Image (tube, rainbow, N blue to C red; front, side):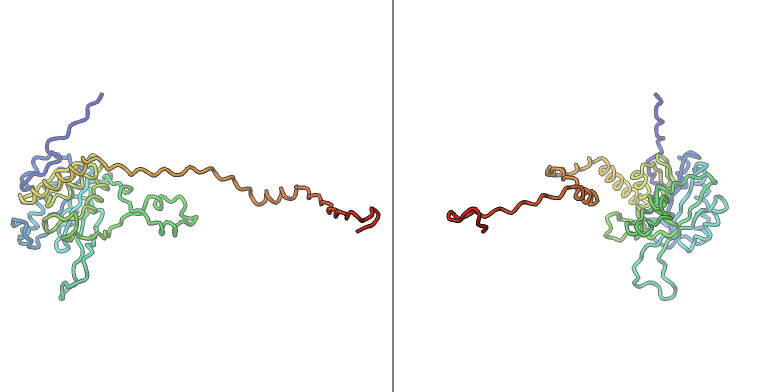
Length: 318
């Protein structure tokens, strides 16, 4: 009997350290997917100065971690990166010099139409780059198709669509993803200013990381990539510089482990249906007519004779 290979000790771990220093822990060519959400350099406070660099320093730093991370990918691996429109052109050029770009995905955050800038158009989206190392990259579209609702399926039930795979299994999500950001009251929300929704991360994982594969996140933040990996049957490895966020990741993973380990609630017992005798099969109307035609006409009964009075002779007709 073949013994299953054990997972290496660096898998399913989040290292609370700088990714540039910690990437040496991961062997080259061992990761199926890099999925990462680096600081946007917009001046946010992540407990360090990573989001408060000059433009030149930020771009140099970005190129440094890209060059350190890409060798960890397998030959057919992929990369997704969240970016702001302010820096996506420069970073896309960096990645295009090293990989093939497959998509620029627009994440519509569904920001309410209130307030905003009065000197420009309000920004309501993030940019996501999807890159691959070579042409035979792993990609499973069927795993992320979106099912058609009943009304749409009915509208497309004409004969020309019969047997169409896309109608049965759903449609391609395309490159515009309209998924609400996580407001403060959202049940997924952790104490992190730029947390991404599980729905988006799980879509990337299912499409571009095979079951049992490994996803690498260099900037774990609140740990959504790790949670999505465990929920989808994948492994993860990641880095987070802020100890407070590392503690949040640990708490979220522990809560998920309890959720996954809890026994499923028993299905409610269905009430016993009253046993009914099967109704007699109705004869078709045509059969009924035929039977009626074959049936001989009923013989007419002779009218009953009236009883005679005692005093009336037999030969008198009454």
